[in-house]
Length: 178
Image (tube, rainbow, N blue to C red; front, side):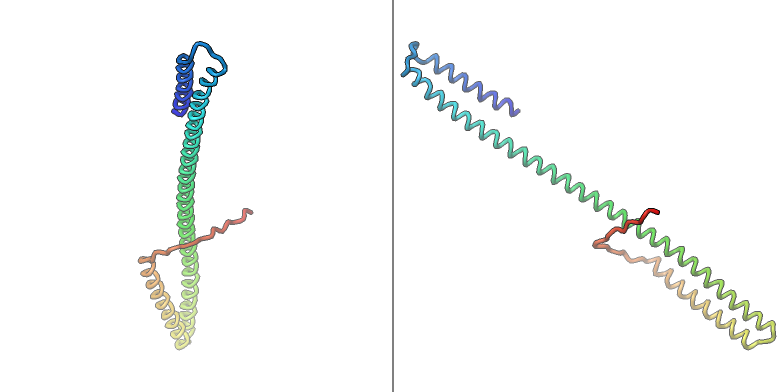
């Protein structure tokens, strides 16, 4: 498209030059050449300014198009980076929840074993004819188990209605490869 505009300008200058040469006197002395050269020079200057204006507009349009393309690409990169950041945050939250769950399960097992041990010691005291100490040990262990059970229920209820955590800025910690 741009080539056609320039080509038409060149053809126009040549047509005007041919017309002026045909309209001039058949005797081309120095004054006749001057009469012919001045209009041709003026027309050539106007066409060169026109070409200069065209190239400036083409250059400006090309720069604007490139700026637009780069802005779109930059926005696309920002969106992809935000998506990746959100994905990393969700995976980190998932990993943290999994680790917390396994840690709580291990802790619950250890606490359960310690309470079972306390109950067993209390039962041993009862069989060994130390009723007061045995019953005291078993009621203490039972109360602790009840409190622990109640706490677990309350935490479980809070986890069923989780609050949405908002992150404003997260720095990713990279793990070292062993």
